[in-house]
Amino acid sequence: MNGFIEYFISRLPEIGILLNQHIKISGIAVLIATFIGVPVGILITKSQRASKATLTAAGMFQTIPSLALFGLIIPFLGIGFKPAVFVLFLYSLLPIVTNTFIGIRNVDYSTIQAAIGMGMTNFQLLLKVKFPIALGVIMGGIRIATVSIIGTTTLAALIGAGGLGELIFKGIATSNNYLVLCGAIPTAILAFVANYLLGILEKVLGPLGNKKEKQKNRKILVGVAIMLISFFLFQVQKYMNKEQYVVIKIGHKTFTEQRILGNMIAILIEKNTPYKVSLTELGGTNINFEAIKNGEIDIYPEYTGTSFLAILGEKDLLSPREIFFKVKDIYNTKYNLDILEPLGFENTYALAVNKKFSEKYGINKISDLKKIANDSYLIGGHEFMERVDGLKGLIEAYNLNFKKVNSMEPGLIIPTIYSDKAEVGVVYSTDGLLAKYNLVVLEDDLKFFPPYEAVITISNSFKNEYEDIERELSKLSNMFTNKDMQRLNLKVTEGVESEYNVAKDALKDKGLIE
Image 1 (cartoon, rainbow, N blue to C red):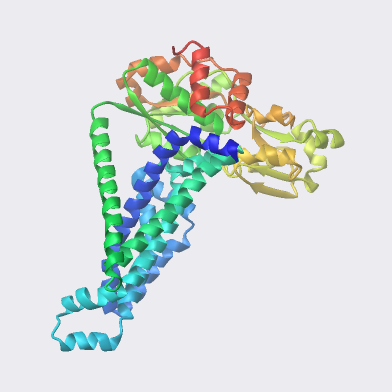
Image 2 (cartoon, one colour):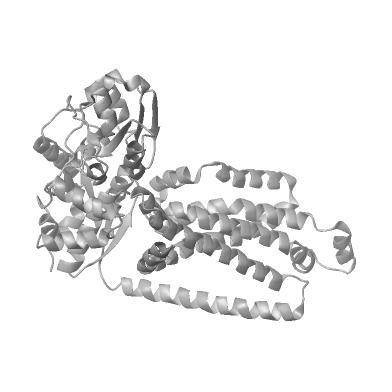
């Protein structure tokens, strides 16, 4: 327990920044849903047909898995804060609209008649009778929406919106339970506090209740309101200050090596140029590529084999340099993008097995799997299962037929293979855990996997405008070997240091920063 507390305290600055992002995303989404959902819920009480159509439409968004909706919205709204708020707004609507509709509709008929008998207009009836009586039910909907959205906001990290989900996904990727808890505990506390404060607001606004208790609750709400206003003013000032300098937008994927490379790029720019950077963790290959293509990021680290096969759809067997130049040529002519010279290491896909399993069945090459594939369980990352250089191509090339195949978070694959929960795992060749767990990496004897040289993808318009940044990034060329990256990856995976510190120390060791 003491170990976790110390770890939590060491991460407090990062937790604070991500908590700030989490509050902004979820808070704005629920506020917009409330300002739209409550009036809509009131309006549809007038028509049975309108109420059915509206509630059905709001309910449809709830049936779409949240992760899928985040992915579907990217082509229309891009990545980051705005699409995250929009998706969460859609998810907030149903409980707010439904509870408003039910609350207003179920006001006692005799009460309504009495108010009409007193000469109230429809507006007065709504404002002074229906709404106050229905307030408890309406607030119930807002509370449900708020608590659920605070949890769902963790997924916003996958489209570069930030929030506490970043810590959770990093923790899962590195098998670091402390890091998962650093994201999960503040999220749970935030949901509890939000629910408590909304409960106080409900009591203050309600027509009934003890006067002394109401005064006490009002003081609490005034204090919270002052804090929120201060928070808002701080954000406005921060935004205005941000406009005074150029911010370079850097993206990266959601696994350890990409986080290290993203931090290397960011540190190199900030230390050696006058520019500021924003570092955004996005999802997989396609999200990063679409983001740089659309100008939402300026730079991100990639691998030549991934660009060649997964993005460009090429299938020819070429040498590493041929692939590099072909990707470079097509990127320049078709997408106005470029790739800089390789960083010196390859992070190819590979298949790994437990050492005991390898020795028992004599498995040293991928083709050796033929004799036991029918009784074996293969696991791999989600992206690998759908890529042309992934599962389908591998099975066809080697004529394999596995008993069972499942996709999972890449950071959990090596521990799963080591603990004998699956026989074969798709891994990255520079993963430091391979050496730690003493797994056997199978030889790709048919050369199915192309070369995956690490490169920096950069927008041409950005490169032409900021030539000094291109010069700095070119210093990374041929600076790191596979063993270097295994060592750096292991430091992060073991929880020895953060990605930022590992990246900074690596750049210092290479003499690239002071």
